[in-house]
Amino acid sequence: AQSVTQLGSHVSVSEGALVLLRCNYSSSVPPYLFWYVQYPNQGLQLLLKYTSAATLVKGINGFEAEFKKSETSFHLTKPSAHMSDAAEYFCAVSNWDNQGGKLIFGQGTELSVKP
Amino acid sequence: DTGVSQDPRHKITKRGQNVTFRCDPISEHNRLYWYRQTLGQGPEFLTYFQNEAQLEKSRLLSDRFSAERPKGSFSTLEIQRTEQGDSAMYLCASSQTLQETQYFGPGTRLLVL
Figure 1: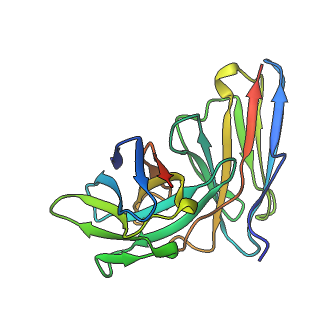
Figure 2 (figure 1 turned 90 degrees about the vertical axis):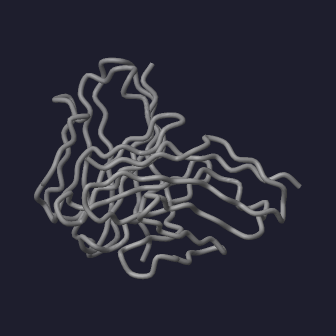
């Protein structure tokens, strides 16, 4: 079975500081990995996805994530936080081969950005 | 491309009542997914359709839940005899094919009193 663990339910950074949101996955088959962002009372928006091509994935709004198989990690980073980055972030894993593409989400990390 | 839409956005009901939610996927998207998100948690998979065929249902989906996608376009999720534990955000997502990105709607927030 696949699962995702997001370390830290709340992360607070200062504006301009590095953002690092941690995600570890468990999968018995090569995974496909995703980061989604959710603003209050809204649905989820895809930030980036890893689908077995380049291990360093660049997404929207300056975010990127690196797939590290040896560490079973897919941490999300952004060099300089902006106030508009404050939101809930979800890491998800999927297996297109035999899981129908359903997404398995972590519990989420709420990012706060201080002025 | 108008995005995935869901209706209603909010629903308050009394325990024991039936409720129905609607999801309109992005035009020509063959796959449609339903997820449930409770407060402070990530979304959990409920069920998905490829065209009009319902291909998988989660064990989270009790007999009180039923979903349809009659013509392979919009989908409905019905909850019968609602319980307070059904209070959650119900999210719909669609994708064009298996490998394509899932686009999410704004969700329907259900409160069962």
